[in-house]
Length: 363
Image (tube, rainbow, N blue to C red):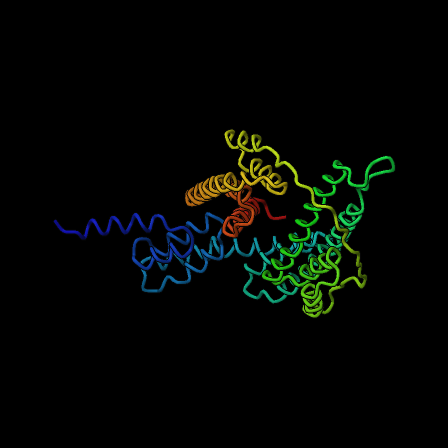
């Protein structure tokens, strides 16, 4: 028996599992599907520019050339121009209302649809700077107030007159606060490093500044803060103030680790995010048992998130965009730092908006 039919079937099955433009490119290159058909599919999914790109690859000698050109001129180009006008108008409207993030997104979407995107890209960059400035200003004030509250708390829990200076209840309260303070300080530095990797200098500056507020005189934080001051855009406004407060030493007291029954109960109920939140709180308080529970919780969260993501991909291939967005949102809720999930959700929401805009009558 010849193996060629078997190999061909296997190849088709493998290709059927490919999602996205690269998978389609591969199937087209193998002759399993025509560029014209994939262009039509992309168009009906709201992927206008991808559809246009595919149609332009259909050569004059191709049997689909005439159909491709007709589809390009009568369907794709009118849709592209309509969406281009829609996003340009939306960008101006959102900018007028000072909705900087929405304006930036609209201009970006418009630029992707334009054959001469220079002006829209300029508008987008201007909006991006406004987004960054508003974000920074608000985060800076909130972070400063939060740090000052932690620092003020370090001076609390001093036994009042009438109690011994080493009163156990006050000592335990101080210890609990100090653990929280140390964790808060560590997380602050971690965020500074995270934003450095993301190339967001103003947020690196913000968290380095916060770390210095909590741990004055730290050289690595001061050097990083100075470097970021020179890295932010020339027109970006950074505050000039500087706060320096010393940490208060506390007496270490041995405490009894809290119980993990609540975490196990949440796990049995399938409430994995709530279980993880409780487990992390217990670990902060010294409970070593939850380390194993956290491993199990994270494993289940990863599996559920991936399942939701794949269901979203399947719905997308079936052109069920609303269902795909619901599944991708679930994946992001479970794993909010997974870039692939976030990108798919953003793409799904963009396509929803495009399809809705295409259905609306021109005004």
